[in-house]
Length: 90
Image (tube, rainbow, N blue to C red; front, side, top):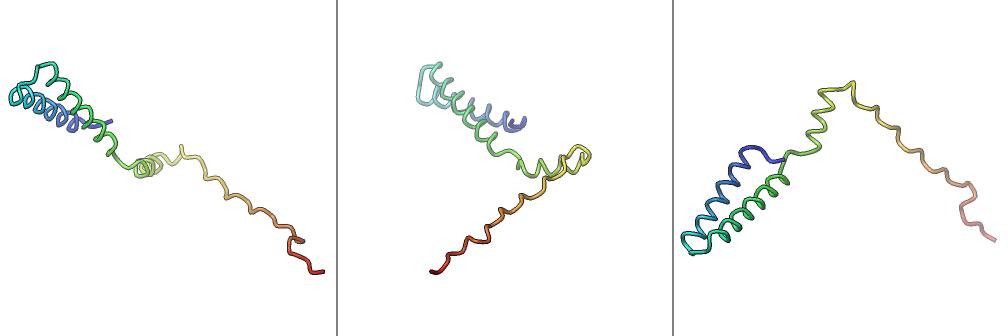
């Protein structure tokens, strides 16, 4: 979820784009508002995708609450190979 700063920035840019299209290009108001809202939504989606690193957040959570962390699982055992898997000469 984007922060408050990103939401304010998206609203200001969306409003600016809407005013630009309405006043400079003389677009109908509903169309200018729609373009501004679309631009604001796109900026919020980009801000959401550029959020904090999930690995860093997970490491901080594990450090803050070590009693809630599940013990690591053991590594998988290697698959035993068959002793007679080498080709035989005749």
